[in-house]
Length: 591
Image (cartoon, rainbow, N blue to C red):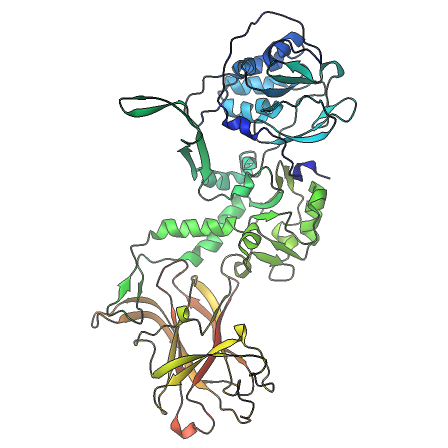
């Protein structure tokens, strides 16, 4: 069982919000206190052991980075351990670890790495004095969890033995334990791991460039006001990332990630970005508009870049809590690797958090789950596991250019501007119930409702028009689901068919001759199509139709699909003038 995937919290979080309070102390030598008698501070006790001289030197040279990102920190860890702040320290004994590694990093100015990966990995902002035998997941000063077990002899910390004569050593500001088997190992989380591997540099550089730092006034300590300006005694700054999912840094999570190598990252950009081919301005009309409307100017390149990277990230993380058939309590490099190689489906965090039907990958559906991670074993992180792939293996219909389906009766999708819609007096939404449905008509009606476009006159050729939402630039197969006229009339045993053409329109601009109409940049019309009047009929309108422009996330503007009745009075015995439509479907094509 992988203990890091258990979500236990035993205090310590409030320590990050406390103000460091420095008290005076003596550097004079004294004996280490007994279990029942505290003598001196944590710093005094560490020095007195004379077993942790390397650790002492590192603490004296490492700054407490409570003020981050270029704001000077002046407090060193030896000063922190002399203060009244309550802490627990698991100090590694000299000669059991490579102290020169950390001293060299300090000499190179890399205080952040030494603090995060070593010093804060041995300190907790809470007093764990071993007074009650238990196995605990301790929240360390670097926000990592560590296993502390004082039910065994000797006690252990991260499975490292604690020296029998130096466990639970009391101090006036906490408890000291000495580790005799070495330093506590540091595992990066799924954000930190990006810095550890050169083959992830492309993604790392992009993510790091989106870090944002903000001043947290609520967590900061207000001092005096000078000339009307408030000054803070202690300023707290927090960091968040504009694009990278928070789950990657959440130490309470247990998640698997599929990270693209530099090569795979470039493949992903080249594959996805053409589907976000935006234009700098979009034009559209509504039922009530008397002039052509337009969006604001679109930052084409930046919007395309953002959508592209979001598409990559939305398929990157897979909570192991949420994967059907996987027991997160048994998570390990071996079990996670085996699961990705053999599972039938995977659901990304975007899928389960938003109840999407998207971002679910199933074996045999364009690409197998095993192919996504290339059959590799993952790398272990503090909050999960990471696969680094050589290629970008995701397919567009499951990952970013999804199928589009919408109900024809929903008013949001009905386009009633007279440039595109014509010749119907009204449209009725009809409801199918068990008592009204014609039992002799095969097929089902989506959402149990469909729409009837009623011709203005008996000879009118109805033109029904629909706004198609969130289309990406790329290829789709476009379908309409037609409903027979006797869907609600079981006495009608000779239903009439619908005859119609379909027209797809996109890439609009203002008409130079009529300010209330648009010029159509891209249009295509089918030949006459006929519905099967004996069933609910799904009819292919356009195969491999390619939209040149992306409309995803553009408010108001969409391509417009027209269903044009080809009713003729001469054919009235076999053809209906009404258009009965259930839904519109766009099936994304793999590109």
